[in-house]
Image (cartoon, rainbow, N blue to C red; front, side, top):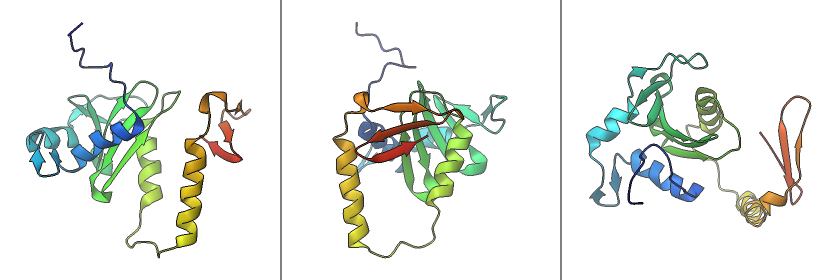
Length: 167
């Protein structure tokens, strides 16, 4: 008791994970307060230690963070694909939680490839209402009791309230 392990042990909700990511996206600032030294953010966002990982040769490491300098993304990764990913060029923080490991480089590609746009989408009250409704439904979903089916290709499908989510 009273000892910090440093490398593990945090229990965070996805919303709390996103707050950490936002702190890093804003260069260590929270509102009008500088909580982390800008040099710390610079170090982790430009991680330089090449880990020579067989699955992702471009992944670099520094101070509990991973970076893909070629993709302008840095992230911290926890057990079973619990990831806080910061994409400064896109002004985005992405958070994932999962039950299995995931290749960080492929995850960064998938997220950055999905959100690219030079202009904002036109306003659509109908689409916004539909999205809000879907989020409300998913938020009430009893995830532990949801039927889970693994297909022969290894994909996992979870169906909750008639909304199918696939990995």
